[in-house]
Image (cartoon, rainbow, N blue to C red; front, side, top):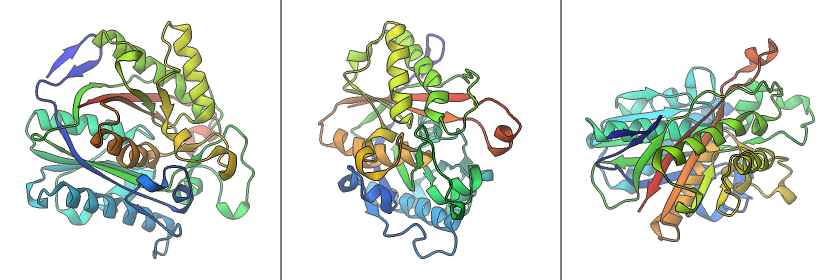
Length: 333
């Protein structure tokens, strides 16, 4: 691998995404992408006694399914990269403890899926032959931790987003016929001083555009190079902000840009306000929807940029602003 420009890495032997798996909750199952997910749930508990246990089960079963679909024996995997939104990433660590594989717990808030793919790809270029990269989130567990108990029935402002109940998992390998991860562009922490925890799209959009433009400058590419440019979960409001920022910087991304948080729910009928969010948003939409598009060669390259808000409930209660982060990977056939 070699470094391009300020912050992009190009792989000499691009890792293959062998296969992916996705499991989502009942609200996501009612959305426009329902036919693309491997499994959908009838309720948020999935037979467990708590939402946290349900989320651990979701990520466990998603990883099991991804490994099964890859046709690679578990004994041939070198490690797992995983993360979620809960304190100390308990969904990942509890859900994946029985796999008996070296485990890298990763936290980049909602950017975790692409951060995991980036680190997994670096390991494939180095010591590993096969790795799993996965993330999860759960609406109920995230609401309880970051906002208000569901029992209170608090109103949500129009700028708020709906944390996706779901998980996505990807199997990366040193061998295979693609799709390939050809480049990664790790993001910088960008903080524009926004403090509204119910307006994550506005807080994360500047980080998305910073990473996107850095990727273009480092690779000498432009928006037209990609069939699609996808952000992780800026939602409707953040998406519009990102388009405006890019336009002001001389980049027109409107024609081939969309957002996982916009795609996963129907704004008109599902009352999710600004759209979806959470680690499981980007993970499930890529693993369920876009990977199948790549497999069918309906798209041949994609720039996937997952965004995250690097805050927690304590920092918000102490009046801190919300730092944003965005990591990018270029996936090509």
